[in-house]
Image (cartoon, rainbow, N blue to C red; front, side):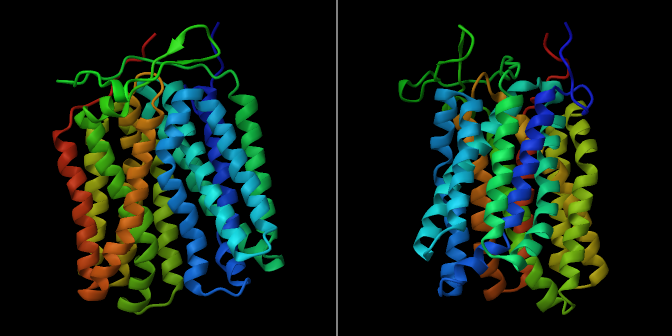
Length: 420
């Protein structure tokens, strides 16, 4: 009997469900984002303390990722996905009812732990419900859910914040409960399509301290996990980590922190052009996600990572060497186009090198992007302060080009024919 497919063509229904969960989570996060620093300031704290509430979430998400990966390997993706969303939902609802700054800070930190659990579990499950020939498109669809939600959430969040500083937290908690319910109901009987991992040349001998974890599932058979040590032995996985680090550095770090200051201070134009540039970048990325996914599956991960990093790097160089408004707008379009490939291809590589569960493998991959998002604004900001904006963006381009250089030497991991 043929299994039902999603509206996403030949992709399984689980991809649509995971994309819907990602959309709900991203909308909720976008709703609460404008309210968090304002709500913190309402307790009478300074700007640094207000910013620390945001940092607490990001920091705890980063430091707990590997632990979340171990939980996935031990208990399975679906259990940890639902548990992670529930933790974020409860902590967010309580944060909206916080009576002190300290309560708000602690609760947002707990939310970061739940976020790490959800993200690692969702991505690990995504890689297991599709075979290699469809993994690029699946990754693009999942990223699309986050992208669309990230665009819609802040629009609603700004309006809700104007009504009440506590209301966005309640809305976010409800959206998370909806996302958790979607996952619990529609992923309960997800069909896992485990396949042989891409062979590793000169793989190291098994290390008893980092051995794969065999965990029981709903079926009598056991599921084998890929250890982090096994994944690191593959050059393609190491390349995916570097490209993911560059994506975090440029897309989630420098673009969000430094580009707005560059537009208003160096280009000396109105703040509205910050929004225009970001909108063009997001539209380009959204429009190219589906074609990018097809390219990754039909042509390969390696050329996609090379092309994505090269286009994004050129975009950063354009901004580094010009303060003209048209150049900035073209650069933002190019950066969005490069991000469509960079945001999906490395994830497909990670799925290709996994055999069975790979919670820790996915966790390290997530951490590489988060680390880039943390380091990028700090390093680029210091360069802008001591040297110039040009140096900051040129170094960002250099980080992206390192990923391109490594991609040229990595083995292709795509398997063009679905396994039956």
